[in-house]
Amino acid sequence: MTQKPALEKGGDLAPVRSDHPDQLLEQINDAFYEAADAVDRLRDQLGHVSEQLESRFLSEDQSGWFEDVLCHAPWLTPQAQQLQQQHVPLIEMVRNMQKACDTDSSPVGWWDRLRRDFGEFNELLQEYDQAKNRLLGEVNPGLGWGSDND
Image (tube, rainbow, N blue to C red; front, side, top):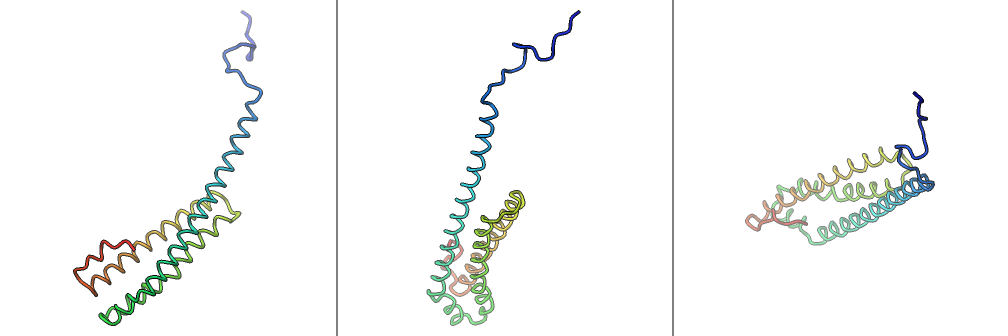
């Protein structure tokens, strides 16, 4: 019996196209650009969140609701001050995430850190909103502060 060569022309192997490696390289290159575009979009979105938070907190400060709490429920002063003191750290968290989009560190480490940072930020912002609504509810019971999404 004669043995068949392992690679025979017209054998059972799928044909290899001459442009196949080029296509793979192009796909990989496209993936890099798509990832860079995603990072750019993420950086821009985080910039918008930062701007919105700054505007929101400035509006809260200018609306006088902290002063209303102090006037109508002075026993809640520590809670109101604690909420007000969270403004700058929350904005800084978002700005730091935005800066992380420009880092040269490992993509996997960067992505995991950014995802954790965003989760922590999101949790802190939700806690802030809930605490603010509770505080407003204590100052003005019955006005439905719990449905306020500011």
